[in-house]
Length: 264
Image 1 (cartoon, rainbow, N blue to C red):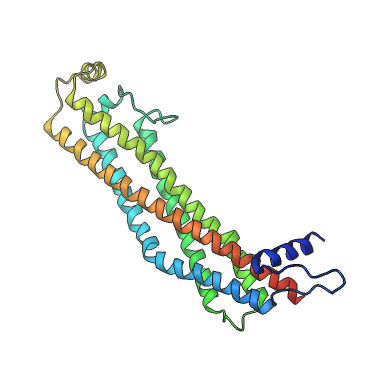
Image 2: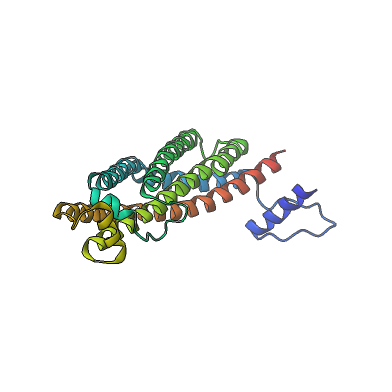
């Protein structure tokens, strides 16, 4: 009963057809083949956008590798200088939350990068599966069941993998923001004589930082900030694609499932 009601409402909503008088047997305003064609058209839009985004998605692997190098350089900077490593102990680092020291921050970022690599691989696989199966369909010959099956896959698997990748990148963005804040604090410490810097000097037994320390900090700060800009651009791109995919996949699924009902 509920299924029939949904079917009737959807037919009216998508076709603008008014219900027939009760004395006349109600007929569908659109045929299964018409609904099927609409479902195919929306899946075609998904496939087109996926192909356009393919080069951008493939660049994620290179970005993750570059980001890993940035994290490694950050870790080396902390470890290579006794002065810097001890200054960090006294920094009032913002955004840290549960991350209480740089070691945990670095580990967290590396873990996030590993997770992003895994989710990226899953999204690429689901994208390839969708595209290869869509290419097997013919607009005039594909059955409603075939189109519905692919629409359901896109709705439950493809979109889920895309969202997981987006969430993984956001996790990297959050930990990278902490790294950027830490690096900026280190840079400020090297240029000021605040109390926490004096504490670090006393702890380390050093009177001043070296010119190499300042150079390394500036290089790391600039590198991290550049990676953050790239990362946020990729997140925005995924979000925009996701919105378009959700709209077209939802339409494809509705049309194809209505066509399946009419064919029964």
